[in-house]
Length: 598
Image (cartoon, rainbow, N blue to C red; front, side):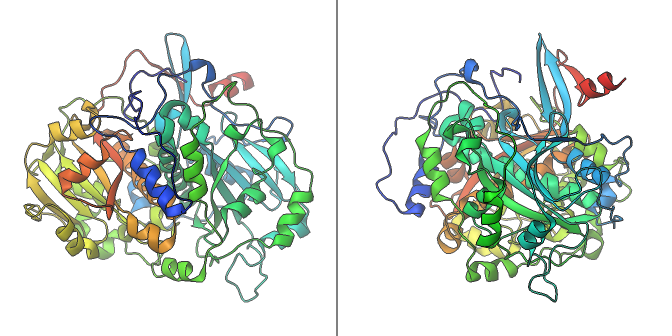
């Protein structure tokens, strides 16, 4: 991995003056205390390392030596649909579940995308974005027998360095049926998954992020989980499949299911993986029971089996960040209660409109993209700097924003079962036909009156000229917003040098109180999902984007007039013309495998 001295996501190494322990065992109090102490302020940054200890830099890849490996064949052609057609809702033929289609699923979601080298250093890039390119997110596959993988069901870890599956646990067919009973909403309460379905799970290694970012790292791990969730959802769609997040399972049961709670299989407590989510990938149209949870008998059977391989050590030494552990414990998801399920089911993500159903001005048909979705996905890069000159027109801007709306983008938002809680506070810089200034995109128009009450009373709330009806976009304050964007994003010019930047303003305290503290993680996931879409839209429009994790939290809220914790800014983003570093050499993702093959 490249030793960076500056990054759009990197927090300056300034120590916080706040070191007090939480005085309450109440999970909500702990989460709120963590969020407050990990805010950046003009006079101090959140608690972080004094400098980067390169000797303890985490190994970039988690693997399980001793586990049997299955090599996934690299795709020899790109058969993915046209980018604009796919996100406009074009139907995709369902691929049969096989080693080949499974390989493509990972290739377009979590695999390596390229290698970079400079001055003797070499580091890999991946399809899914990550804070500082540290990649805390791990993925597991739980599946029935797959031709050319195994004649038996199993639990596998995906190893992106070599595009391999590592078998952590071999199952009997009876184990698989017992485990997955009740996952579908069929006629029988014990109905197992239909043919061609499998499960994936995501987990996070907090140490990967805290090595560089200190206490704020827990936030960034959740961003990256959202990025990975979006990436896997889109990849499933490219295969003609659907991905559905399972709500019923608790974190404790998920850790048990994946074997990541097995102390003897991991080198240290600091390098353990925290469970994030479980999802079913199934043929489009399958009815999934999102309230599913494994029975204790099924889990006990798995626990008693012989698990294969042990996790590799990532670092020789570790710096402890106790507040990350406190926050993780306070955000642990329990078994879903019925009132939570009812809330989730009040929003049906698959009954969304398509562009053609709503506003033809947001349709990308006839645009100049003319590239496959797979090509856009695999060329995605994070901009290191912006040129301060590139411009886009307002129609392009409106179309980019349209892709962030659940009701207009089922290809992305069909995986989740919750309504939009994130809105985009926009700093518009270089958009032809649009006055520079501060804008707001309401991703849930029903929140308009609430936000008008909460925000600065001097805002004009004016609809921009020619804005499509489907976009609840408002100009709040016309002005040159470049210096404000730069200042608020930890003085980083990348926030002012693009066509626009944004603060993801998120409904905050009410979801935590109403639904539980585990929603703290999900609020960040939603920002990560939006971020992944913005990354792809930038590539499709011939520009580039990057996520910004370093910003001054409360000053951002003050700019928008938010005085309480009803809304909080949880992620920043910028998009524009990139400045390419000509010193960098680019190598193909799996050149070392194809070269050896030749």
